[in-house]
Length: 118
Length: 112
Image 1 (spheres, rainbow over the protein chains, first blue to last red):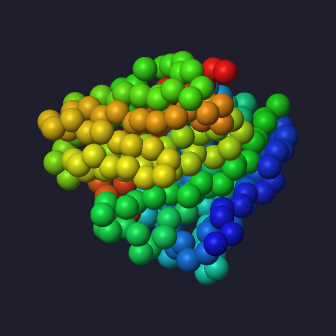
Image 2 (cartoon, one colour):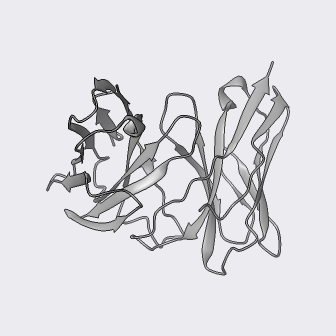
């Protein structure tokens, strides 16, 4: 297992621009979810992908979109950036075989991409 | 909204046990209690989970009250590296569409 890796680790954008964040899931994990974490707060769920389809979404506008690829890597795209989009964006993956086994529903998180919007 | 409430911060002396409480009075019968922690500048890390029995692993112990309305995460011998924000979360075990709802957590400071 190689863990969950995210890129870039840090980036700065200006208001109105678009950004793409990337995530490489842990080997064998076919479910990926994205979270936004503002400074001093807990992570907030954006959406989740399973087998390349979105199957859950939090309270985020459509300008937040995503993709999951056949190799289970994924992207988070944010259009028309706003100042409040400044945050740490976390990707998390889950192994399909763990769910339902003794209640295991363990997410493995990456270290995140810190986005600053000026 | 998070279904759990936790104290915003706690201190613990290095080498002593850290006991982090969590209230989840509205937990349903088939919801599990999960604990994650987030060390500065890293993503959240899974610690432990349980349904109704006490659980122990190499990282921590989880004590769940008999009525399941509260739980305590125990780090038996806290070290400086255990300084982190600790999140208590309740959710169904196998609902793929249900996300993890993180509250603000408890900021644990382990003091030398």
